[in-house]
Image (cartoon, rainbow, N blue to C red; front, top):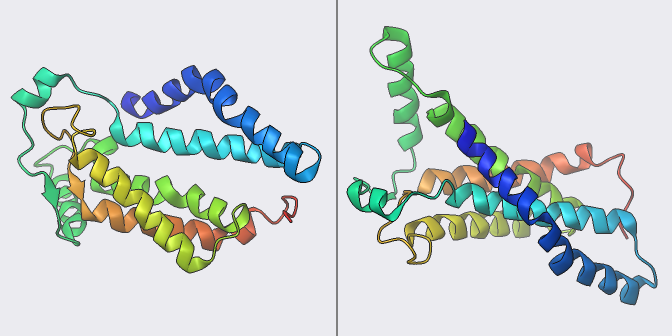
Amino acid sequence: MHEYLIPLRMIYALSPLITILFIIPYALYQKHKYGTIILFRAVFMYLFILYMLCMYFYIITPLPSFEYVLANPLPQKIQLHPLAFLRDIKEQAYWICTGTGTVNISHSAWFQIGGNLGLLFPFGIYMKYYFRRTLTQTVVLSFALSLFFELTQLSALYGIYPAPYRIFDINDLMFNTLGGLLGYHAAPFLTRRFPRLA
């Protein structure tokens, strides 16, 4: 499970730089547009930037060595079967029930599905509450963001690596997009005590 803490550690290390590069210009923009700095908006935008960077680090880390990538090529670079997750669930359930195999909870089918749903769930909330996007816009943006992540993995981190070290998976696209959709629908309930944004 420790590999899932890597993005948080990277965000912590980069937070001063993020503040300088993003929040100060945003505060100046607010000052110009509204005549004052609205603290709630600034904090919410800061958290959104941290969240987006954390998602990005999540899909690229942990970074393997070049030697490891060359010595352990992926047996499959692209997974386009939309129901492959059902096969994985069935297989892992069989292992658990029969005791014929072990299931690493952090890499189980259930964990991967939950992780992909949760990854863009906050994105859907932001699209609805902060950016005032429509349902269609949120679905399109969620799909586009997920596609960017999958293509980043397929491109071997934009050609930096000699070969991809993660699979392009259509199931990730499906569940990421669904997560954004669920976040959009949950936003009115989760943000009902938040200040109204004009």
